[in-house]
Image (cartoon, rainbow, N blue to C red; front, side, top):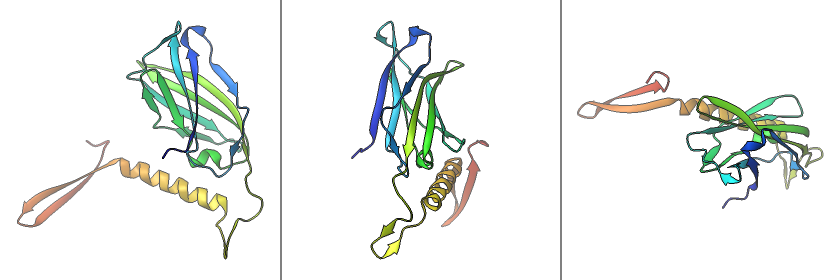
Length: 176
């Protein structure tokens, strides 16, 4: 079941400008993968195929940190990214730039300005115990996301040597 909120807008590629919008809604601090932002590309009012393109997001948090969001989706004339937990880590203003790359060209297609709003006050109490601080939780999530990226960079294969003896080869994808 998908419970993310989706904000996909139409972009006319012949306009010659980067579309910039200001969210009229706030996002909640401590969320994760709750918002999907993107665009549907049109050229002269007709769907423009984005096949072969990639989409990336740059989320500038209130603390000045830029979160790079890889792994967005491109299907037909539509491209979008989904905000990871690190984007919701700090209360305050943010700017999200969504870029499209393909054919040797990278361009900012959409910029969104918005606000992350504090959703807790003081320590969060679960009946019987104190829930860990949000920053500790987000640090653990960021550590896990980094570890997942490292693991995705490895290829693991098993080779039968003889009988029941195997050789396990671990290679970084850069070496392949």
